[in-house]
Length: 255
Image (tube, rainbow, N blue to C red; front, side):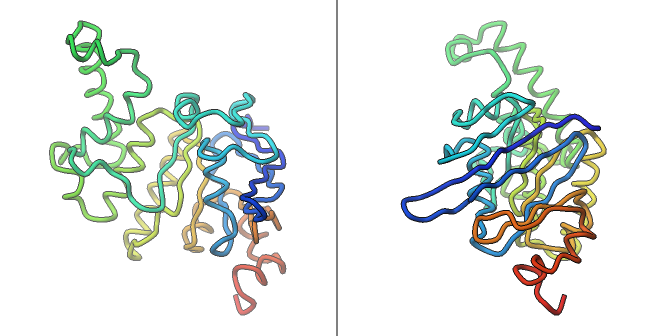
């Protein structure tokens, strides 16, 4: 069996009297794309926020590479190997495409602010290494040819890819994608699906939240379904499409 990369045990998140996520347990294995689907308000993004340390779960545990990361800060979790994109694009608009990618690499570097101010040999060496590494990630997302352009000059679909490239630049063992196809047209969504599957083939382990069922069914190896914060089903795309409870809760009776 493949190595388990991410595991959650009974993750629950309450806000006062509201239970946004209830007893959710998932697994992500090596070289796998796992989808998390459900209606609006099902708790999907809240669950991502728990995984990445924005929220500390009310109950339950999160394990990354068998290490308990429950309650750790987002920057610690990023250094340990889990990064994400966001529903709304959050690029650094005053930076170039290259500089946006470089920000994802800096969390792995050792030079500090004093090194930068004094322009120490370590800082200069790491800057060269960071630029070389950034070019490799730009090649992955297909943007190396325009690396000195401002990030906001890119078309919407390519801005999405740049944001994913910045997440990849931190060299994660788990990549979380929160509705990456939001706002995309059909061709952009098709290109994105091919890109996500290529990332898996390159060795990235991915968890995907997405409302576009064509994308989910095309790229995911397994799917978990949430409804009102609770986990109601899991299985392959074919199994999920045939699950009566999922059809009723999310996909619709006629589908």
